Length: 142
Image (cartoon, rainbow, N blue to C red):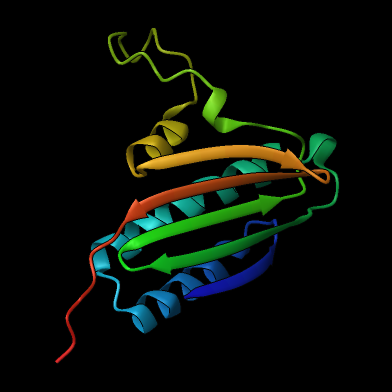
């Protein structure tokens, strides 16, 4: 079971993404906590793309989102045409440092890792491809 959405990579896209995720979750009886986590993951990816994916504030591109559900295993595929960037290659934040000592950034990538069981990145045909996998809870229907 899968669904696809293509959005323009801009600040307004998240509303579309939330509706897409909500419809998918309802159709496949995904629990509300997992639905919220899916939105958090996609918001992080989309926000980073909008903020950093287009140097010199070039015209926004597009992101293709695919959700695949196999039993309770959900795969999120996020494909964009932004500049090459592998978020998974970035170092984890050092939580032993105080807030004042810690460099800015990196917490969103930490969230990606914390909320997924598997994550991989590739680059092909001028596009970034991020695949995130996690198990979700399904609601039993009467």
